[in-house]
Image (tube, rainbow, N blue to C red; front, side, top):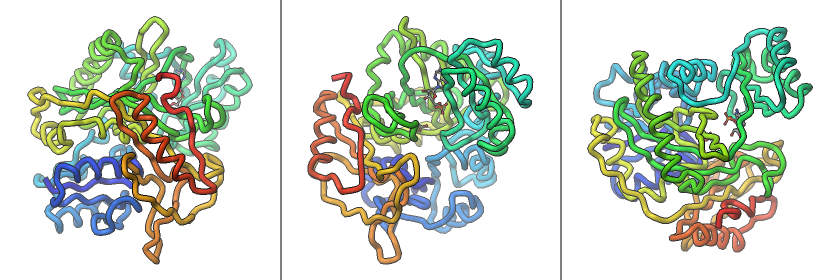
Length: 419
Ligand code: AMP
Ligand code: GLY
């Protein structure tokens, strides 16, 4: 397979690394890529320009496109390439990607197929939304229905916050068009885990599970972020819970999407809340791999990623025997001070060679002089792998104690309470 990965984060660097390990010589390009991907494999084109992507793919005999982020999928990159029989784009069509692109759609879908999730109502006007909030108990969760770069959800512990959240969203001030429909949903108690499902529309395999850390500081303090670390597999998902997740959530989702005439293919990311009684509920669907969860799921995968992808393309997932290492992986995000607020950019990132931990680049790029500089708040992801969670943690944190550049920070407690 000649593969083009779309994206520029730690997730895409981890995908590149995984694919490269089983194919040292082949064509594996990343568009646009980042400072961690060898320059000769980076394609400096915008992710939104599907026609330019097509030209590049044709010129380099690319036959498989793996899409990292949600936006191109929601914008219909799979549909766009359906006219090119020689180029397979792995992922859901725009209609199927609505499971992530429209939370109102996802909730209505789950309701129809009786998939466990929080009770909800959808609103497009401030008055009725606020009236509903006056009748509800707190806490409550207000969600912009459309894509909002991970910032569209407000967990509201008091009514004032909730009233303001619906007003900010529905007025268009907070999230533009994405907030003009709002889902108001009951607060679910429990612990969160993410399940990554690969599906060809009919059969599926569990690629992996993870728990991630969204708050910026140790002890889950401070603002929400895109994720400060993760570990895999998710320890809170035991066998009994996984059996429920499959029969109550994954299978009805795949069946339901097929029944609606919009079969779901690609990666389905199921974000779960697991209650103290062990009952799973869906917090969100995403139509792609997680970031930084990919950086812990893929290092544990023993089956070459190419095999998984081609089985999905050829509708042979049912026959694939997918193998993962028995140990654990932990990833720790090295972020620029200030993140998730404003932070300095274009800071040179001097990279030591790691003997053990795997260093994935997230927000880095090469500048005009070829130097690697930081371009985002989350700059590097340090992944350790070990037979135990403790060993995996040690591998990642040993690296960070030796390499801790000034002006950067990380959380010290990724996976800590589980060892
Ligand atoms: P999302 O952007 O959909 O991942 O939501 C961000 C975070 O909000 C989730 O990871 C949860 O921690 C929290 N959240 C979303 N929906 C709920 C809910 N119904 N109950 C409790 N927490 C929620
Ligand atoms: N780490 C959360 C996400 O990828 O949406």
